Every structure is written in C-alpha cells, then in structure tokens.
Image (cartoon, rainbow, N blue to C red):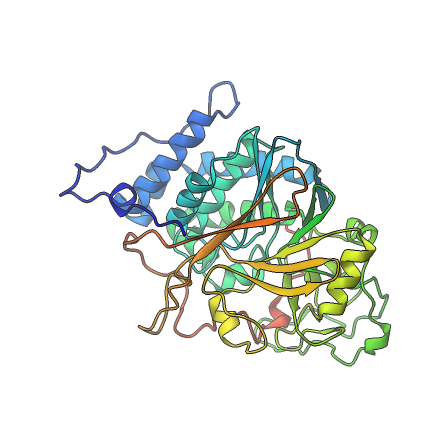
Length: 429
C-alpha cells in the first residue's frame, strides 16, 4: 500500500518556507502545451489550495485561461466516439482510475505514484472528477490539461456527477460560482458543455471494458409518460413497471449509437443507454432489472456479467461509481475499504469496482470517518487482462477548505434522486 509522504506533500512553515506566490497562469504563446507547462499548472493549483483564499483563485488562474483550456479539451473529447478503443502497444502499461471527486492532492499523489502519463503509460479515468470535494474545478482542469498534452495517452470518461443535476446538488456549481463570482455562470456553462463531450466507455486491448457505472440495456422504444418538463422540486418515480422479460443486454453497436450530448442522462424514453452506463450497479441476484434504489440505471447479476464478457470476447469489466458510503448501505457486496472490490467472478472473467478517492467523502457529518483507501489498477502487457491493484492512503493533513454543498443534509450515495429536476437537453441547445 502506498503512503503519501506528508512532509513532501504538505510542507509547513517549520519544515520549509512557504513557496512564493506563482505568477498568473498564461496559455503558451505557440498554443502547444508541454510537460513543463502541465507540471507548472500542477504546482500552481497545489499552492493555491494551500495558500490562497478560494475566491482569489482568478488572481492566479484567470477565467479566460480556464475557459480556453476547457474548450480546447472539449474539441478533442467531442471527436472521440461513445466507446473508445484503447489499443496499447506491447511496451505500454495502462493505468485505470476510479472516482476522484475533487480531492486534488490525492490525484496529484496518484499521478506521481503510478507514473505520470507518457508515451509509455496510458491512463483511463472512469469519471466523477467533481462534486463533494473542495477542489473539483482544479482537479478536472488538471486532467483536462493532461488530455490536451497527450490525447492518445489520456482518456477521460464521463461519470454520473459530470451532469447538471449532480453538480447543482453536490457542490461543483456552487464551487465554480464562489471561485469566479460574476464570471462563474459562464465558466460553469463551459464545464457543462465539456461534460457532454466526455465519452462513455473504453475497451482496452480488446479485452477490458471500463465505464463509470457499468453495462446497459438494449434499445427499447417506449413512449415517455412525462408530457411536459417537470419543475424542480417535483418528484418522479422511475418506471419500474417495465416487463423484465422485455429488457435485454445492450450491444456495443447500440452503445456507439447512443446520444451522449445531454446535460443529464435521461431516466425515461428511448435514450436510456447513457443513464445505464453512468448509474448502474452490480448485484449478486441473477438477471437484469431496473435500479429502483437510485431511480435510474440498472442492477445486473453475475449471469449478465458472464453474458457481456462472452458476447464481446472480454475478460474484465472495470467500473467505479460506488464508494464506501454507497457500499455501507449494501450488505450483498463487499465494502470499499481498500479502494476496490471483485464483485463477480465468472467463467469468462471478473467484474471489478474501482474507487480512487481515499478518506471519502472529504466532508462527513459523522466523526466516525470511513478512512477508506483509494486504489488504481495497472494493466500490464502482454495480455492486459491481469489487474494489479495499488491501494493508497489519503494525503494528510488536507488543506483547510469549506464545503460547497450541505453535506449534513444531502445523502451521500446519490439515492432518492429528484428525477424531475434533471435536464435531458443539451448545453448547446
């Protein structure tokens, strides 16, 4: 297990003098990011989190720079298909990362511990970069910078929290508006547009499927029961009356054809695949059924994992989506103490849940914290199908920060969603 060096990661005045204030970050004159530029951005973001009031962030990270980086990355992401084929060379390793939820310092440690992205090391991130943690903006910007620098070595997938609804409830919208004040709404809209461009899944080396939530149903054309847009605050129940015999496992071709450019993945209607990919959970019960607990997505059993692996000639499913809080409420599956669990072990392979945010969530209502480890997976050549797990502890002490959502009132595991407040339109519409 990796343990961050507190002396190196959180210098105090007694250990070393406070680093001088960095100059405002500027876009490279030739328009091309370099490793030195990304390293400088990393150091600046770390310094700001420790030494600068959050609402002074624009002094060092101007809104124009933020928007340019987001737009540049969005152009790259938009060109990628829903299902990205990651085909590493025989000399490349692949690192898979789960939820990070705005825990900037743990992400910086993870990148250093795993070995930074390079021509020899590919990274696949499974989504949930923002919300709950105090540095969602900085975390996502850092990963976008890596994507712009190395578009063929860094792959960023969408999580359920990269959505309008979740970011309005779990803190990211408030974080952006607090840090950028009058320019906040405009900056936030750029992030929403970028979220829509994030791909949904990858297949690594032809044998490993990764996605935030997991698998998905085949397309079923059904009329929507909602005739007009619901107002915020109105509760809607998921349509759990669908005949389970009509629900079938989706194909990769259907995944490629789904419309991902939505602010919030639809929970009803015909475009259900994005919501399934982002919100679904595994179960130990056989079959495929609606996820009544969340109100969106699916529950699937070991038989469906076997079917998905067999049909698509795969050996592993690596999904994320469930941290220690969610698993604490589920007694059928293992806890998330080590940052990963093996949930299904079937004839064709395994289903793994990977969670990369240690000591999560950052803000907890109880003094009895989860104190979980985070983890990442390394897939090594030549077969890429034997996961090597690396658990790590949180960087402590964390810099002091205030939450951007009411963590004592908002439930931690995304249950009882206000589905009527979700927006299945597009930020560009």
